Length: 83
Image 1 (cartoon, helix red, strand yellow):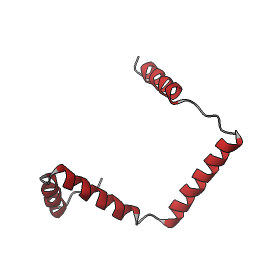
Image 2 (cartoon, helix red, strand yellow):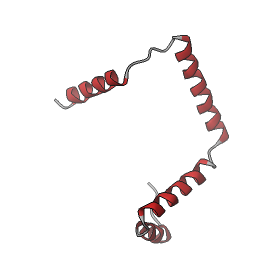
Image 3 (cartoon, one colour):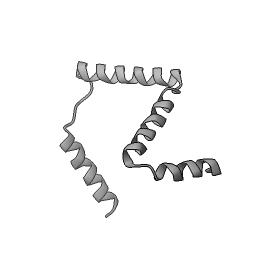
Image 4 (tube, rainbow, N blue to C red):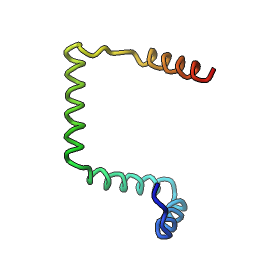
């Protein structure tokens, strides 16, 4: 992880003193700025992946699993890993 510069440290301190609604606005603004700088080839690859997965669902190739079943499977894995 990158070292935090003194300038960034001051900005973080100042941001932490803002009211929560203003902190949220600041965070959303920063995220929007980062989103606008996404590599187009990476975005195109994700778009293609989403299209592929949707087609697999529509065609019946992909088997859908209910959320409750996924949670149950994950809890079983967690219990088995710790015990």
